[in-house]
Image (tube, rainbow over all chains, first blue to last red; front, side, top):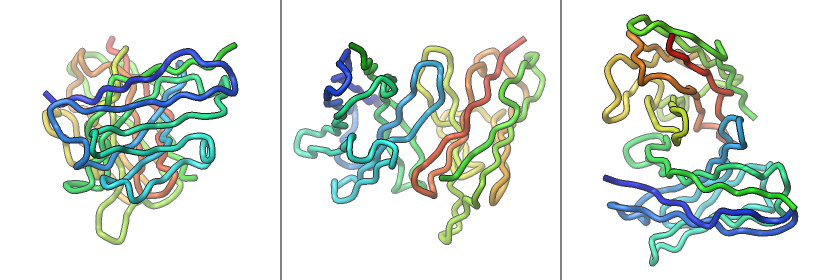
Length: 121
Length: 112
């Protein structure tokens, strides 16, 4: 069965940084456009950033632009989200998601289990 | 930003009864390619969200036929013909046309 697996979350102090990684099981991540979505405790879903399959294009929500950076290493079949200048309101579960752009309009057809990032002193 | 407004925000349904969720967008989600970039996701308690419907009315692989989507332009609806216990959770609509892509606030579905 295909899966996405996030890693790299944890407890970080305000102002700190983290890098989240996303790996795939049973398919090649390099063939897909990918994105990141987060969910603060008890809240709804917020799209953060997306990247094309070749890494040539990326899009990031204005709300985190300049602090969060999406990237990928297709040789290692990984996607990353670099989080910097973290604030308490960045505390959330961060989901890696696969975008279906070849056979669709970019809907998120596969979600990871999520990685919890807690920003606290 | 495009705002998606879901109604109702919560719903309590008896198994076997129908349910309907509305999603209204502040901008049209129809693109020049003829596709409408509106999707529906379900997040069951303690789980990650998963895709139910894409491009308004296309059911994703493995999604039961009791789920259907309809609408156009700015007004969309998700319907469950006969609710089952496993349908409980929070339903989100999402638009993937205008950056930033945005989600509705979610509709909590409870099974009576």
